[in-house]
Length: 286
Ligand SMILES: O=c1[nH]c(=O)c2[nH]c(=O)[nH]c2[nH]1
Image (cartoon, rainbow, N blue to C red):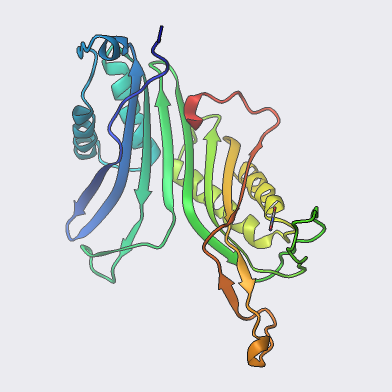
């Protein structure tokens, strides 16, 4: 006999751009919003009774309508507004998860109406609401950073398959994928975001690294130090290898000047740094 296990449904990756016009000075917020609802959804799976199902099309429409009615400030505020709306509005829906990604644009010159897509990272958040409580995880992905020195890697375990030479000076590069869990909502989501981002960048730059793992721990620790309401930081750091090219066949030396930036495979270093007294996580990591 089969039974229905955990399930959820929603509209993935609604792309919404909200323009705010103050005379000739316009502002844009460019988001990708994914909603996921769960609750008393047995009947739709078991008998095809759709009466509890708020269509995913409606969820998409709600994203657009809320962007118009409420505007878009910090993505966390927008995500929470939607999560509360979905979880509070309908008895069959017990839990709403809303994930938002923000794609950054910058002004194109002095024009108030012209923008250029920024090379900055994607800002992210995931909000959950269960009708009573809310959880929030904020984060970013594709924050690409590189140090041209102050990175070593040696003293590692060796076996019959190990060929990697030890290095006392290498390029260290990664595309930071980070998520931080808030024990309590900060006054200002944007300020906390900038603090966390600044902490990640500063720790990457000023840590003398003996491994990317050590750098990961330093980055997570720095976010906790700079952001009092954050209790846990998860980091996923691809090691974007830069291999020194052997130029000897061409009669040239290579004193850390020319590198092959390898695409794949790449090392993937992942870890969590949390406060000793971090409260247990809700479902917000999911
Ligand atoms: O910082 C590193 N950590 C590793 O675990 C590892 N493994 C490897 O081949 N190079 C590196 N670099």
